[in-house]
Amino acid sequence: MYRFLLTPRWISLHIVVLLVIPAFVFLGRWQFGRFEERSANSTQVTANLAAGPVPVESLVGKGAREADRFRTVTASGSYDTGHALVVRRRPQEGQLGFYVLTPLVTGPGQAVLVNRGWVKAGASADAPPEVPPPPTGQVTVTGRLRLSETEATAGVKERAGLPPGQVLLIDTGKIGKALPYQLMGGYVELTKQQPTAAAAPAPVPAPDVGAGGGLNLAYGVQWWLFIGVAIGGWILLIRREVADRKAAEKAPAREVGASSN
Image 1 (cartoon, rainbow, N blue to C red):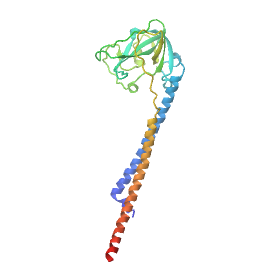
Image 2: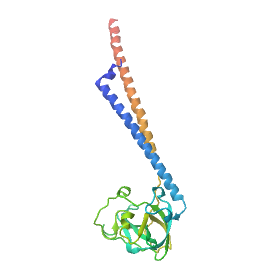
Image 3: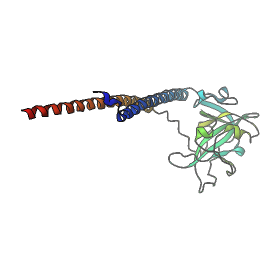
Image 4: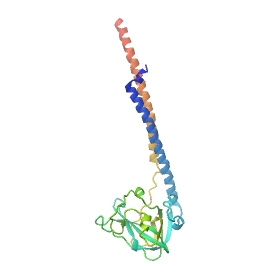
């Protein structure tokens, strides 16, 4: 009765099922891995945002640590507007614009890069945007510690030939090479400063911590449910084929009995 399982058509079905099951297992495990990764990141970022402010010098030296992303930090010094930059291709609230970067000189030969916020783009792609000046004199800034950007982390491809004073990446190592002092690793995303400025760029929104990978967990469960669907469908097809063959075998017997009567 079950010899049909060795026919070419059924062997092909067996192979498909045997290939699909490990594929679904792999996809489910990958989604569960992403869930764990994003949940850990969400937990860390939430804790860092809630932590009290600390001096930026206590967290960074030549580089900022991944574990300190979005920690609230403070720094005091004076803005060096002569080496200010703007960062291209930074949309905010559906509008294309620039981030405003200004070094804050914190001591002899040392500074930290401050992202003072966002300004809308000018009349053309290469036109300089209107940037409100920072406060003069001694300033104390508070903000979120961010890591130096790369093409991979920012999703922006670096290119040459930009207008003076414009960059595509907040790469503190590269930016620091053109400065007369040493930049600390990472940069500060400004949230407040004292004294305040009469006009200032729009603040950069706080990071969206999100659901911590909840969607990945749902996708992982879904892929593993598909394993049950594949196995259940395979068994159902076999049982249906067996039932059809049994019915076909009984049909001639009934027809013979009816004709003899």
